[in-house]
Amino acid sequence: KAGVTQTPRYLIKTRGQQVTLSCSPISGHRSVSWYQQTPGQGLQFLFEYFSETQRNKGNFPGRFSGRQFSNSRSEMNVSTLELGDSALYLCASSQDGASNQPQHFGDGTRLSIL
Amino acid sequence: AQTVTQSQPEMSVQEAETVTLSCTYDTSENNYYLFWYKQPPSRQMILVIRQEAYKQQNATENRFSVNFQKAAKSFSLKISDSQLGDTAMYFCAFMRSGANNLFFGTGTRLTVIP
Image 1 (cartoon, each protein chain N blue to C red):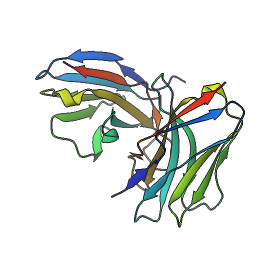
Image 2: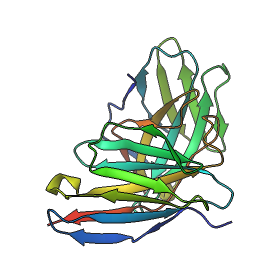
Image 3: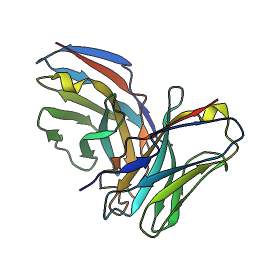
């Protein structure tokens, strides 16, 4: 079974631009969560999608948004990029999002803002 | 709010020896799950071991075991017979029962010395 796939692996943008990151979960998994990892703030939860609906949201500004498609693939969008958005963005999937199921992570997308 | 604290930013251990990584957490919840994740330089977050708070028995997974002390809110990871491939960042994480978002500690960088 293929793991969680995130594309692209690396991305360089400039301030003010917007960016879209993609995550394909493990086949059969319907819950997708996004996390931001930075040296200063560590790993922080962004949001979770299940059956095309945002089910849970972390404490991030509205510039951060996401969506999930009917095939469970998810995209994350960041608008009006700031230098502080430079981070590793990790996606995780689980079967149906129940807390007794482990989350499986992808390799992440490294976003650099110039 | 949940907080997870890892007080050891860096640790090292000789190959084949045993090492213990510390983690404490703070929560008012009674039902929750605790996890240790490993993040090697390849960036992928890999689940090492999981503990359900309602289970008194400590979880074990081959060379990895935990010491879960619910009253003390402590959740340490013991790695026996350390191998070079164990070199990685280790993150302790908390998940409230019924939720699907992880709260992570700041991580411990473990180096296994040949």
